[in-house]
Amino acid sequence: MQDPQLAPPLNRMNLARSPVAIAFLTAPPAGLSRIGGSLPAGCSYWKHASEGHAFYTTAEDHQGCPVGAMTHGVVLPPEKAQELHSMVGNMIALRYLTSEDVAHIPHRTDAFRIGAYAPLGRATFVPDIVLFRGNTRQIMLLAEAARAAGAFAPGTAMGRPACGMLPSALESGQATASIGCIGNRVYTGLGDDELYLTVPGPLLENVLARLSEILTANDVLEAFHRDRAGLPAGASSASADPREH
Image (cartoon, rainbow, N blue to C red; front, side, top):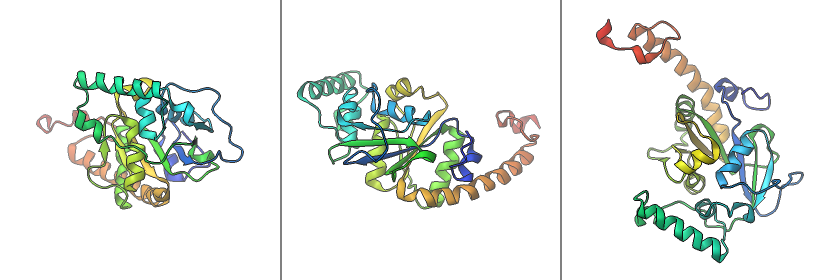
């Protein structure tokens, strides 16, 4: 993906999808239209925005996925609250979650009113969170840049539910990686080799400033390690078995 409105280091990343700017607001941003129809899960809106759409959602638009509604701070009507209870109960019965896990799922404490979404290069609002989706190498590079900027603490990688990384990053003020969850992979088409990194909006400038240095450093180090492993430029490192040399 090449976007002239993005910082040059991001264009060097060749991300397949645009990073997504997300903000939790009390009123819709000027000039932004509401999503044309509710999607099945909160993470579905990430995918929609990464495909080039800018829009906002209301709390009603997030009731399709009770777990996502909980992490986003959506106040559910009684029938949806019961659906959440039943869904969580099923997950516990399947040993997918434990009661202790449920108690520690990150969630926004402020009631959800408006969620604004846009491709980062087109955002007309100040993002609370910028969400990156990429393959393992791309997220490795972004995580290294975040760590170099002092914005990625050890232990800030998450699993289920993927939407919990948004409140986690907001609360901690640190970039948060997520390996996703099965629901997210279904709703967003997240590839088997893909994962996420979320960066709090106020930290984005510093992370991108370090990203350029990290990309250059990795180019130099990759050439060094390939030479040391006896691999030609561009060869797969999967064949780097020292017993073959």
